Image 1 (cartoon, rainbow, N blue to C red):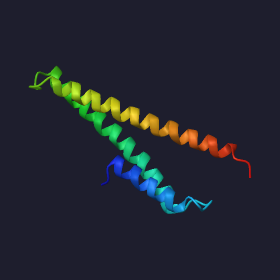
Image 2: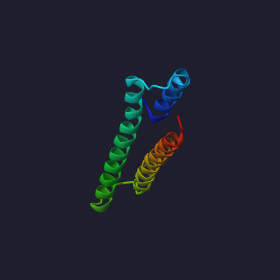
Image 3: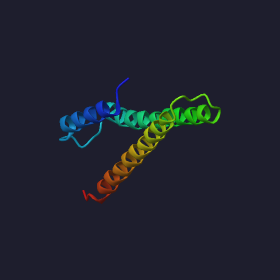
Amino acid sequence: MTTPIENIQLLREAISTTGKSTAVSEENRGMFADIFETAINNVRETDAEKNRAEYLLATGQLDNPAELTIAGTKAQLSVDLLVQLRNKALDAYTELTRISL
């Protein structure tokens, strides 16, 4: 499984190699969808990790309370990344719709 950073690098490479073409290949669409799918899965995983840490802290099973803070920060950062990816995708779509042919 690739990391989000690797997915972004692959997307950059695909854009640079297909930038001259007006049509987007199915492979590139799949890669774009994979980036968002990875980001969504990351949000789910980090949120589950945070919920687990909250449960362990509430039941007195968590030895290090800093783990909850770390898990919460990871969850927030993954949500922020997903929101930024969405915003950039919407900006790109808006820009594409403004292009006159």
